[in-house]
Length: 292
Length: 316
Image 1 (tube, rainbow over the protein chains, first blue to last red):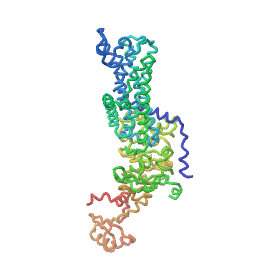
Image 2 (cartoon, each protein chain N blue to C red):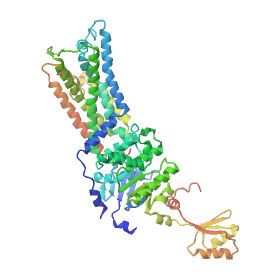
Image 3 (tube, helix red, strand yellow):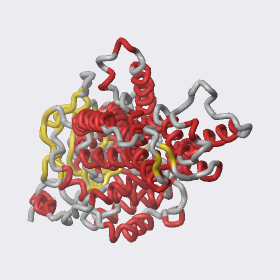
Image 4 (spheres, helix red, strand yellow):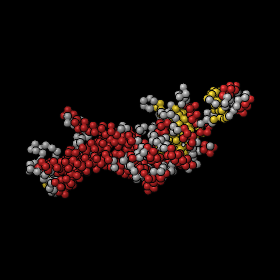
């Protein structure tokens, strides 16, 4: 009997195996102290905003001053605690949320390479495409978890500090609190989907280097650069392709009827980023020499 | 060895070459054959290309040219079929410091598509027991000593029954007792039929546990074969102990002994091709009082030094 024949007799692999790998990836990611610290920071933002608004308005004045500055919806929080959810998402979406995603995505491959655990996952053998796909799925789930942490924290603080009830949309119509909650959930999903592009970009950067810190710094650096470029009028022609360009479109979900135009553009753009940088990450990772 | 050569080798490389992007030739035309059932020692100084070779065998690095077959299948193309049968410890253990020893093994086992999740806990417990880590299984891996990390790395390689174990410096960081335990474990695994591919810089370790060995320097394979043949290749030294060293040295030279060295009452030299009994007779006939007359068997270390030319710096 040749040894080569023996090799064929591997236990038949269950197609559900990939979910086992995903579960392992998720528990590993969410048990990291760093991940929990990021989520704790995100949970603290609505608490700070809520307390600040409460203190500022305790003398009866309206928040945000007369000039209408500050994040969207902030002036309405005192009337309805649910608005703290929208305010908190608007406040965290430009930096805190994508930074958290950049850290987790940038660390996904590079951090494992840095620790040397990548070589053991690959000789297990996890399979390079499968491992990359699992990593990306984990980062996307983290996008959703991070957004929900902000939303749930904001809802809790809003309910504790401010009254709840029917609310007024941007278009001026009145909707019930239950529908308002539904809109809040939709907005959270839209915000989470807005982060898919950053997640793909971070994962691609992560396949380029063997240092987790370098990948995280590069991703967060790109994030800041793109947001600055998005403010320069001379780059008007390029701006619709910046991943952050349509981020604030989630506010359109608070219109009556909902204005879908920018929302769908945002989703399309995020999908484009996922495809382009996902493919680039795959091309890089499946051909790379693992020397770490 | 006859019955071993009948089956296909566990590892077979043909002109395996790796040139890194910087142009550095790490492995140069390697023809390596690891027979099934052997405990194969892979020797070579640091930077000789051992680790690059191991990484190519495990599908982590793409060869520049040449082929590598592991368990009869081409690598890196057949990683999915081959690697579940291979346990590996490559360049030391790598662990998730924030996970316990047990959770580290569960993580690595989840990455193996051939591992049955229903038996995972039991197999992890068995692997921990086998390397003597049961008591420390719940401790976070970052609190482990180097020796414990090494044991946990070994346990990860033993999560499933394997056809081939690739162990890169497995006794690194272990105390002498730990080294003995690991060597006993390697012998035990080999007796169960697992082929062990063992890289080490400890020659006596290779000599103690290996049936076969290969020596690499500067990316090239210098020699390979059964350990007994390799050390036989380096000739032993004739050692004569006598109170008359000067006279003994003169007679030995007459008898064709070369490279004669006198140290106090010890005279050593390369034995001639004639019967050593005649050499002894000549000594006695010349009135040399002989206390001891032996040939010191060459060790693998002598063979290694002879082949690589290393270790002569001190004598210079």
